[in-house]
Image 1 (spheres, one colour):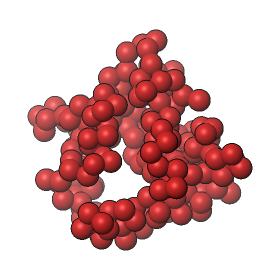
Image 2: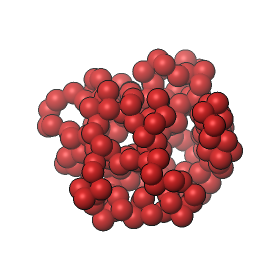
Image 3: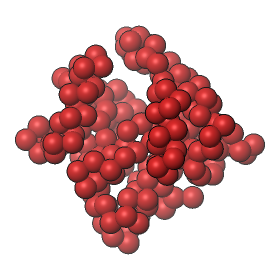
Image 4: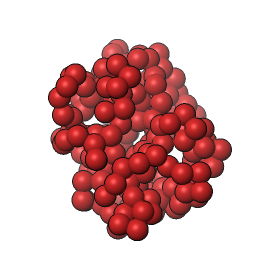
Length: 180
């Protein structure tokens, strides 16, 4: 699996990855998540132009996963990480997160942050195994509070979501190893 910047022509494929990655939520009784629209092409293009949209490409150089991120309150916030089910459980998400961590370190950002579902097995529990910790409500930065409010306005139940943070020590590997 190769991690690289997304190409403009690949953005529709990232939407397909998002749709496929959302499908397992249906089995958890969360059809509204499974049926949610993927990010619009202009949104993905904004991340791509900013240099913060990466794909994991298969042996034929086709995207099977992607990650978008943006700086929020002095950390790199992982806006979205999606892995196509056919590439799941192979360390693809971990590799994307390691790549994002390296990007953050190169820019002197001390941490990764994200918001995720607290009780979905491949969400908060997975990130905790990678070293992320849940941030209590009083520790949320203004930017994370804004993101939570936007998610709530989009229909995501705040009680089911958590904010998490991974500190990025300088010169050390995180998220299971260096990016590839």
